[in-house]
Image (cartoon, rainbow over all chains, first blue to last red; front, side):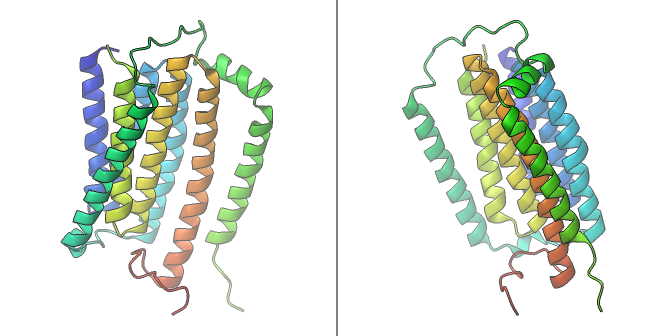
Amino acid sequence: MNLAGFAILSALAIASALSVILQRNPVMSALSLVVTIFSLAVAFLSLGTAFLAAVQVIVYAGAIMVLFVFVIMLLDLGRREPFRMTGLSRKLIGLAAAAAFFAQVAASISATGVLGAKPPAPLSPGYGSAADIGRAIFTDYLYPFEAASVLLLAAMVGALVMAKKRIER
Amino acid sequence: MVTLTHYLALSAILFTIGVAGVLVRRNALVIFMSIELMLNAANLAIIAFARHRADTGGLVFVFFVLAVAAAEVAVGLAIIIAIFRNRGTVNVDEINMMRW
């Protein structure tokens, strides 16, 4: 991927991520997060995995964010959080903590030495395709795959129990 | 030429924006969305490293992270709905007592 395309992509991702945390209306935050997810899907595509890009769009944008929007509409929140009610001191502390965190992450990653100019390893022809990932899941990673299905069942039961109305006796 | 460093920088910036969102916002749903933003940033970092080392295991890991994120969102939103039913608000400043 050339640098201009990556610059546009990252600008879009960062702008929509900032919009997620800065919007007052939670529905606008959810829509901004959808834009972020799509731009990250394009980033996954540029990294060679078209399969994970498609899965990202289908699962994250198509299921998870739809669930978010459903819940926001169900709770009927509207613009119930006036952003100016958050005190200036809290915003400044949050920004300072985030900046310190970013500095720490940047220092840690540069200290490991993975950022050296080592060229990327050569890719096998089917790298990142559904066949490649599927072969890995059903041979080497079969146990986590089955465990993930149990996890999804547990999450479904848990969500149903938590969200259903209690009947007063 | 876009190298690993570019993708890691983008991932770190998105993760930091997610951290700032969790710290500054008071709406439980927006906090939850910032957490999902952090998860996405981590996914980007894992896929960038997997591409750099031509490793398929990283991609499988991201696949499972996506599945776990879906399960977590379902349960988390159910909890938020239950809290809203009991307290009438999703402002985390007002949900600070286990018993009132």
